[in-house]
Amino acid sequence: MKKIAVRCRGPAPSYEVLIGDGLLPQLGELCARQSLGKRCAILTDANVAPLFGQAAVASLQGAGFGTTMLTVPVGEESKSMSQVEALCEQLSAADLDRSSFLVSLGGGVVGDLAGFVAAIFLRGIPYVSVPTTLLAQIDSCIGGKTGVNSGAGKNLIGTFHHPALVLADSGTLRTLPERIWNEGLAEAIKHGIIRDRKLFDAVATLDRENPADFVARNMAIKAAIVEEDEREEKNLRALLNFGHTIGHAAEYAAGYGRLLHGEALSLGIVAAARISVQRAGLSSGECVRIVATLKAHELPTVLPADISREKILESVERDKKFKDSRVRFVVAHGIGRASVSNEVTMGDLRTAVAEL
Image 1 (cartoon, rainbow, N blue to C red):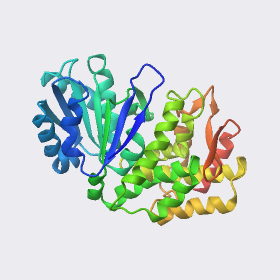
Image 2 (image 1 turned 60 degrees about the vertical axis):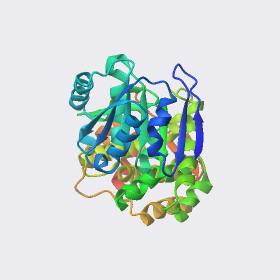
Image 3 (image 1 turned 45 degrees about the vertical axis):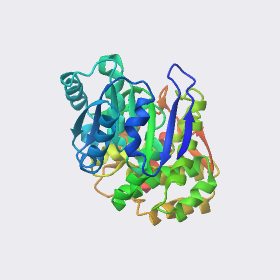
Image 4 (image 1 turned 180 degrees about the vertical axis):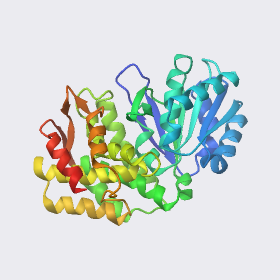
């Protein structure tokens, strides 16, 4: 088992990330060490519940926790305020109080939703994150960002609420369909571009049967950035948004559910790489290599013709990454080196979207 400590600088407590094969049966024992109370609810989705729900319940009950399991539909449509309200009502009906905790069991959607519910239920209760997809393990389970979608865009309603513990069982990744596995690789490719060229290279030789080391390398990058700039006050954490400005907009414009998050991110990475050639000195050869790496893992690099480019640009202008009406856009100077730029214009974004 590998351990990563995430040391928060703000009011949130620090927490531990555990990575290894076969950790799920230890969930109850590990939660018992956190002094979280004696009642909990597991939030999962309709795909994950049949795979891991009973194992999680058995482990928690075996450790003496009164446990309720709540299941939401699969996909981004569950990240809504109506679903949040319904879940809070279910938590109340299950007699959870401020000495209880929530367990997130699933991918990024479940993690974002569970974190947000935990942040606001009874003005905040602890939660434990058990990510079961590659994307959730290497990226979204660390950092404390929670949120749901609105009619205007992705993750526009949310808050910071760090987990009390993250338990990443790499064995759960063996159940992933190829498409879900590949979307997680988009985040790994992003990490390589912004911080670690060797990690970028390692994507090509990743052993899917034994991914724990790869997962831990990605988690260490995310944890180090979050520790240094928890609330994006120094522009360091913003590096994690490489590809996300246009990626989130493409995901929204396509209609939630059509493009997976990692697939939309792939399109955003292509656009960001091309802008980086023009604005940050990324070589054309490295841009080509980035696009080829995405293609090699069956990630989209061309925007489907029926997705409105104007709708993408409208969404970009509402993005959280705008500050004082200026674009804060992450550019890559080379694979492994990135920065936040205020020099990218809406004209640059329009050109990049038009060329997708």
